[in-house]
Image 1 (cartoon, rainbow, N blue to C red):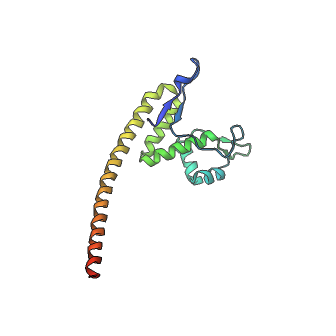
Image 2: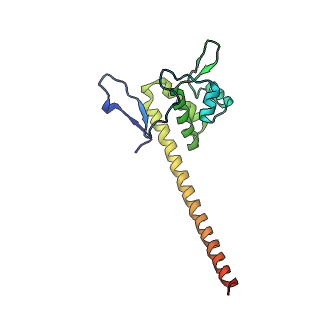
Image 3: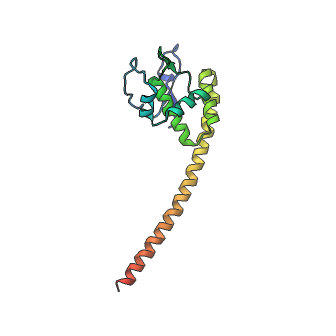
Length: 161
């Protein structure tokens, strides 16, 4: 299964296409329509720092965040979903510049689907390469652990004789 799927098959002919994650969405703390979070609530929910959230906004990784009448940031469930996706991109090792480029493409609209797909496919190839490297490293570790386990057992056998 691919990372992203589209729901075009299930939508009415005049409806717009939207991306959905293949995993079920995380449960939000508040229902839609009541989903206005302060920066401290988002910090608690995501584990990111307030500094990181402000930086994401400053570099263009986050779209414009709504503000209260006093100027405080107010995040929505959609913003939380985006932050969750950005976290996944970070885990892939995608450079921040590529994440910002992806965010810009999303804001440009449907005409950028091909560019977004190519960027994600490139990242996917990088992840698969890293997984293969990690599997090779794991095999080496397993051999060493097995060697030391065998050596320890043979030593124990000699000392009990």
